[in-house]
Image (tube, rainbow over all chains, first blue to last red; front, side):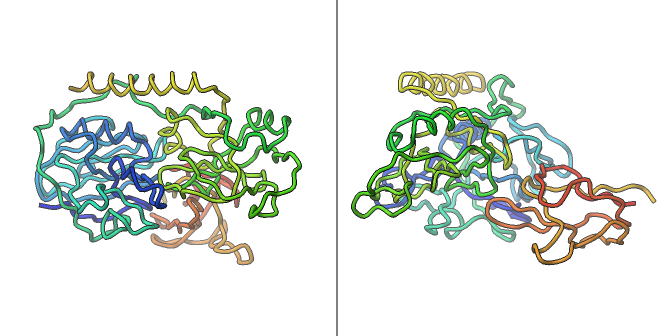
Length: 324
Length: 79
């Protein structure tokens, strides 16, 4: 028995933990931008952590349930309502057949993850239900959720414990200003020492051009490049390089003006220099940044990056223990 | 008549005009009805029309054109 989509907000997509393994063919991993939030929402409703749920950006959908279910909303502070009555985020919420799940205005963060007991059971493509709209893969016929869609549910793997909630200290949203840790590398040598310093000294702001493919930032000083004769096949702009692979989290700065962090739906390669990458531990945070959020980039080394990755794994384990 | 506040459901950049070379959707003193477009908000490379969810006369626009807006922020005040 499916869920009927009454309204879909501005961008609600089906996401699981993605389809790794095809990036070399140009197909990105995709999946939830805030992976911890999706994993946690799934755990709260008794699903496997990699079950497919909904990722709603800024605005929640309205969903009519045709069977009893448990839902959980994690990530952004997008307060849920059941038949108009307020419910908590980061908490298992019982819903009866015929009831409608809807949402208040966004209070904090940018993306809410809605897990439903049984998980959304649309057909997997290349091993994932994640929506990659540019490639028309996954989701509902390769696209975002629309009003009038019916979303099939899978079988519940175990009964959910209603009212189960994640302790507040284990929930994570960006600070203000947001801080994103960056490991310099790749084409770091292409910018001047002064530009290297300014990049980390300046406070940037999230631009309106921020989505699953990349997050753009504005407001810092223009980066100056070390002079050189452009190599074969590189474009004329000093920010151009001979085409190269683009890692997830890599920070490109076309013409040295507006940094773009590539995210889960990244393009796999191109001709812009990258000054480094946001560390894996902070990738989830990017998905929770609203436009205009002041943001600082913090320079770290590999040792710090690996320790931070270890800390994030421990934080996820703490959530597993707290709600198991 | 009671005061009513139209709020933006989304964060982004607030615009009072449909395009830079066109007049604003509404001015202070204009009457609006539920469903009338009062502004647009730009976010994620697209523009979203914001419609009034109440009827009344516009008394103020608390945010200037082309300024940042947060979700839930009042963009039009009605009387």
